[in-house]
Image 1 (cartoon, rainbow, N blue to C red):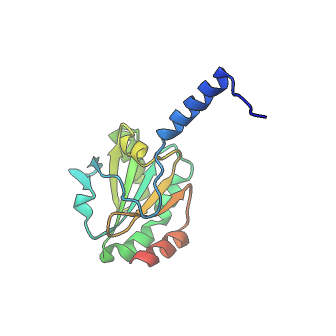
Image 2 (image 1 turned 45 degrees about the vertical axis):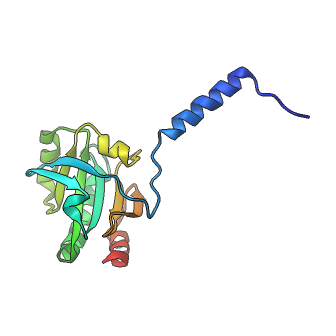
Image 3 (image 1 turned 180 degrees about the horizontal axis):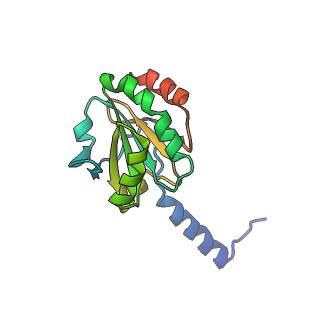
Length: 164
């Protein structure tokens, strides 16, 4: 027996399918979306053009995120070990003003770059749904790994070991 959907059920199905089509689904091996943002400290960054042939870690964070502070401090030693091998970490502050981001960063003592995604456009382009979220991009500008939520220095070390 063939079952016929009611008009309401058809409308709900179409609406849900349309909502899902707006989601970004980056998979390993996909090209990382490009962007142009201001550094917290100076000038502008153009990804991927400014970072050719480098391994780039893109971390999305905000000062209200309960795990961002400890994780940002924990990966600092990993960054210091690998930065001489063309590792770049870009910490993208999502939807906060310069003063808020600067106050948070000043107390952390990190040496990697901070960018301002004030409107959240880059976070949307990457499909970020929660913070922290980290994307590790290989030397060819392709997604190697995505980490949702808090991570550890050991996990970063392992993933970077695959790329360095």
